[in-house]
Length: 246
Image (cartoon, rainbow, N blue to C red; front, side, top):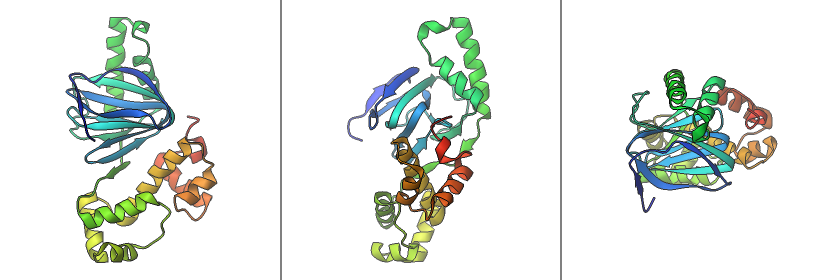
């Protein structure tokens, strides 16, 4: 992130993004909900990457320097908030149920679609639903230790890499035990948990680009499409085939 724009208020509205398009590094003095009605959105900060399909939204707290990137044809919906209904001072991925989805879409429609009174009431209901939205563990944190960073970068380049932690450790000049400790201390998860998270993130981006489920499974390191479908469904609540039909 080089030049960082500063906005006094986080915008509210909608914005189409072409595949690979995005919004460069910026920050705002108010909080924001970011939602992709179509496509997949990734938000990158100095602390890592958050990825959200249409069943998820991303909470971006005030002051956070972040970038948006679209994967597939993406319809971005943005809601700027002066208050902090979630009492969170860090980015988070939130589950979006059908009602919250429709509230976000209605609130971010054309400015003239709603009167001021109706708009205020709609926001009140939206905030109530937002407070009830469960947080999802769908974040890839950024490592700081150079040995851990080297291992993570290698797997990000090739999520299908099947090397064990011991084999990766040897290439990074660290012991397997040291790397296992670094994964837990720096990234808050075990190596297998982090690798699964990485593969799911990568799978969402490939699905947004229109790749078939079987091709995505193999490019992300699963032995079979059925194994991929099972992990994907347990993590997101639906199958990869339904990822962009919700």
